Structure formats: C-alpha cells, structure tokens
Amino acid sequence: MKNIINLIVKDDENGLRVDQFISNKEKDISRTRIKNLILNKKLKINKKTISDPSKKIFTDDYIDLEIPKPKKASLKPFNFKLDIAYEDRDLLVVNKSAGISMHPGAGDYDKTLVNALIHYDSKNLSNIGDELRPGIVHRIDKDTSGLVVIAKNNITHEKLSNQFSKHSIKRVYQTLIWGKLRPQVGKIETLITRSSKNRQLMEVGLTKGKKAITNYKTLEVFENEKIPTFSLIECKLETGRTHQIRVHMSYKGNNILGDKKYKKKFKKIKNINLDLEKMILNLDRQFLHAKVLGFIHPKSGEELEFTSILPQELEKILKSLRKLSK
Image (cartoon, rainbow, N blue to C red):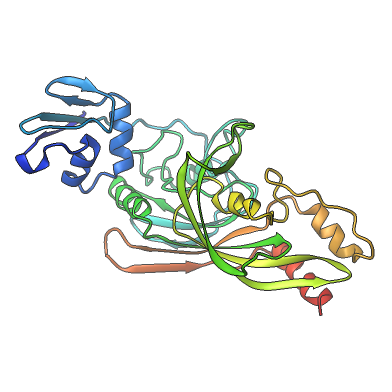
C-alpha cells in the first residue's frame, strides 16, 4: 500500500523550491529522500508529474508526493561476527573492521556489512533506502575501520539522516600521513567532485562539486634519519563527502599511509628499520579509523557519543614509529 502526501501552497510559500517546501512541511522525511522521490517521478504538481526538485511552486498549487512501500531486499545472510559497541530497539553502533564493504556493490555481493546485519537480525533493519542497503544511514570505505550507526526502523533512519544532512553528527577520525601538514592545525575547505580521469576516484574541484570541510590537528610527528617522516592526524568532519579525508590529505600533498587509490609510492629509504619497512609494505588497508561518533538519539533525545580504539595492525605501526623516533 502506497502513501500519498497532499499539500496546498499558501501565499507565504509562493516561489519556494518544491523540495524545500515539502521538507518544511514533512519534518520526518529527509530532504535527500524527498529529492530522490522527485527524481524517481513520484511528485505531481497540479496533477502533472514533475521530476525536478528545484521546480518553483506558486500559491494554490496542489502538491502530491507518493511515498512507495519499501521493497524487501533479497540478500544472503553472511555469518560474520559483528563488533557491536551499542544496541537498543532503534539502532546499532557497529565497530567495522577494515576489509569489509558496507553494502553489496560491484564485485562484492555476499560478504558485506549489510549481509552480516541480515544474518544478525534481518527483521529489524530500516528499508526506506536502496534495497541493497537496509539499515545503512551513512558509510565508511571498505579499507577504513571504525564506528558506524545502523537504523533498525524507518523513523530512526529518517531522523538520523536529517542529523547527517544538517552536519550535526560528531565524526572524528585518526589517520597517519606521509610528511607534515603545514600548518599543523587548520581547516581544509574545498569542493569535491568525481574525477574526470577515473570515475572511481574523487578530486578537489575548482568550480564544481559539493562543499567539503575537514578540521584537522597534528597529534604526533615521527621523524629522524632512520625513518620516513610521518604525522598522526586527527580529522573532525563538518561534511561527509565520498573519500573526503583521503582527498583532502592528497590535496595537501600528504597521502594516507596504505591508501591504494590516492597513493604515494613507497620509495626505498636507506637505513630504514627493516621491521618498520615490512609493516608499511604489508599494510593491506589505509591508516584511517573512524574513532568517535556522536549524535542525538532519535527517540530519547539523549546525546550519545562512542569511541573506538585503533585496530592492532595500526597501533603496532605507531608503537614502532614512537620507538624509532626517540
């Protein structure tokens, strides 16, 4: 059974964008979802189908937005032990390990976090997003570890999505980069767009793209004549663009250790400690970890904040660098 929202435009709403108008009226539906429904031809203005979210509306226009019944996903369960940091009736906070994708996609259909969630509890996952992404409100990259929040129902999903849209979610990452950032504390503010050379990569755009803001500070610098210079950086996101930290670090000329897509070639360094060299060459992920996740609980209104320690393979590299840079 489908649900249709019926609205009439008043005098003081004349000239608004239709997606903004609906968003103002329907607080429980995220602006992103409204936009996607319009793009999927679920909107009628005065009984005429409209697929442009920026369409202007006028006094006495009749607005009908169809909210289709969510599709049931046909996903295989994956018996994978989830590291659950928190769980209640409405949501889960999972500490994702590196090497597992968030959801099915090209070349990886069965062994993803979504498949593991289906195995864990298939009946309690939101289903208003893409049918291959039940529960998924936001994402971190396959080779990034750390905290993600999963929605167990559609109301929770919408309310968390709204917090992400408003950039009120607290997200802090730790990363190890080549060299030193200058200045050592600062804010990177650019546009980020898809790369024109490689559609799998993102890049800083000069005139097009979405605004991306990363606040960073240097926590430690490791340098002497026997090791390459590295810096341990904390990044606090104001926006959450695809590959944002990886693109911003690359833009500054300080690629993340182990990043295969935005990579810096590891040059043979004379006199380097062999154990450290082996650890660097064998690292099969990027040194990027979603350490802190904070948000307002959609039902209770309570402020929640979770912290995750660095995985062992990353901590081991830091210990070696600390020892060698003394």
